[in-house]
Amino acid sequence: MNSPPTPALVTQRAAQRLPRFALLLFCAAYLLPGLFGRDPWKNADITAFGYMVNIATGAASPWAPAIAGLPSDAGLLPYWIGAVAIKLLGPLFGPALAARLPFMLLLAAVLMLTWYSTYYLARTEAAQPVAFAFGGEAHPVDYARAIADGALLALIASLGLLQLGHETTPELVQLAGACLFLSAMAISPYKPAPARAAALVSLPVLAASGSPFVAVALAAVGVAVSARSSYEQVRRFTIWIAAAGVLAALVATALSAWEWKLGSSVSLRQIGRLLVWFTWPAWPLVAWGLWRWRLHLRHRHIAVPLGMAAVGLVTCIWMGGSDRALMLALPPLAVLASFALPTLQRSVSAAIDWFSVFFFSFWAIAFWVVYAAMHTGVPAKTMANVMKLAPGFVPSFSAIALAIAVLGTLAWLALVRWRTGRNQHALWKSMVLPASGVALCWLLLMTLWLPLLDYARSYRPLVQRIGQHVPADACIAGAGQPRSLLAALEFFGGYRVDGLKLPADTECRYLITSMQARAEAPQLPGWELLARERRPTDRDLDTAIYRRAGR
Image 1 (cartoon, rainbow, N blue to C red):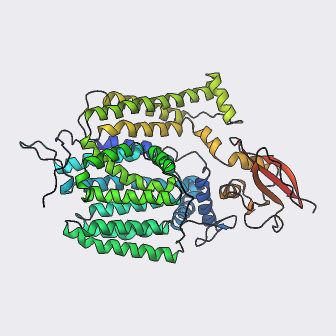
Image 2 (cartoon, rainbow, N blue to C red):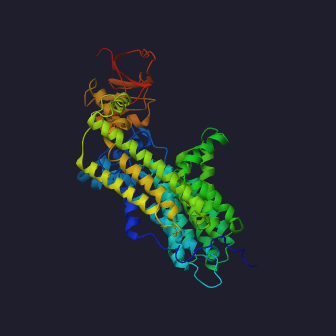
Image 3 (cartoon, rainbow, N blue to C red):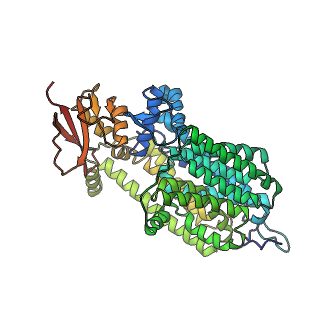
């Protein structure tokens, strides 16, 4: 039975690839900002970092990571990665930067694996564009490169990956494992041995990072797609996928990782709202692409990313609308979005361009206006709003950060001029401005606004305020408090923290408890209230500090 004709009509001129230097600049502008010059931020970032640094310093066992005595509820592998980096690179770069370095490399691997996965999926026969009667259609290799460039740009443009992808959390290791499995599925018709190795590594990595159920679900998707493939070598690959799933289950059992994080019920409206902003701008392209390729849903270039995206979406719903679970769907959604690019009409492409120009230019101007207000006091109202939202903040000037921000802004203006000119042929053209706009905004945030964001999102100011009442070598009881706060007390304050024992049982001399800003401080028998402090940017939450009464 012949396959239905593909909806892709692509000339050789449209299959030009994005210059490699420009592509590397895109990736560098996305990966490097936020790596330097900041603390671990609340909540998940500082919590995961707390487990890592405690392992590295010997305050917790590698087999039982803990913060203030509280064990971790996630997989062990991400904490081992961070702890090894802190142990090896901490003396040179400091613990926070040392822990971020391997996770930055993991994000780079996610980008690279997404590109290669799309490239090999686009090389399949069913994904090729229609052959013209008199020639001139895109060469298969050039077409696949152009599609892969579009997928990479679509992933960079994804709003959901922006912050979560730059944190040192287990979810980034899970994302890298999922992308490695995506690449294993993509290259299986062409490179059987590397595909087997990638499958056997990827699913156990997922299991060891706290997602054994996702690993098993991906194995089921892989078996279902590969077993009915028209490629003989792909059908033989099915047994390796099943073996990888079994290996993942064994790893999860060995690490006691079979804990399902079931969330509260979530409405379809909430899921829809999350999908709209978290997967932008991929979701409208995915919807359009699935419609145009609806006769090809059984072919692997659609079935593989669609099945993996479905696993991420179902996991998100099952975990109560978790955006961190939905992050696993972003690379396959980017792949699906890239296959919509050859089918877009020029008017739709132009609409994406102009929306990107106005949207990201507006935010870039806003970042510069606030930066100017912080350092010059003009506009005065903007400066007053900054001080109202972050009382006590003292702006600091960095010539290097300013220079990088200026270069990034000039590059954005050059891209806008290039795209709004007569460059209308490349397949990936519609993703250039969304991706560069996201990279620009992230760059400006992590240069012009970094001191303000660090002040607003770090626990360091709160720990410094607590330090005015609690000696540096004291023991603090904090049963029932957020793990992020306990980790911050251990790292920033150097305190010994007891997060397990109740006030009546702890041997600590000091105690903290979180409470509503306008609520009365609770009276604790045997404890006297010393002070109430709060993070400068918190309006609703106070931290009450107690000292044991008497001797």
